[in-house]
Image (cartoon, rainbow, N blue to C red):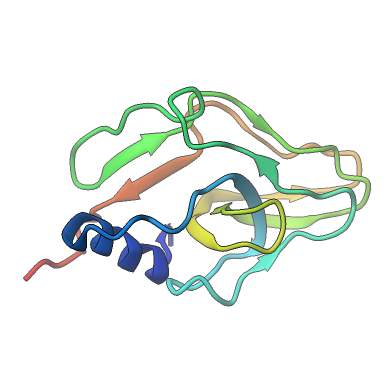
Length: 143
């Protein structure tokens, strides 16, 4: 499963319908060995072995224009490469877009189509077009 955390969905609705400013700005991509639930809890982020979230600003250099459809999507335009692992990181199952280099708030998360083991000496990398965010999944309901 992939998507916006419940808290960020609320922020987006309040922004568009109530005029409330968005309180969070995504700044860093992190990796999960256990993906979060829809409310953003229950995940296990990689730790140790020189792991650090990678800076990834919201701008037209890193992200392309959204493409319509059901769902609408936006994807990365550049490769994103993490620091080389100096210990086993485990099996990577997903990624998250956070507000900080550590701690912070998880705003969006994506599950990998295929999990990937990152062992000592490996480098986790997403090639351009492989970080994809979606909004308006066909299963969403609007009343």
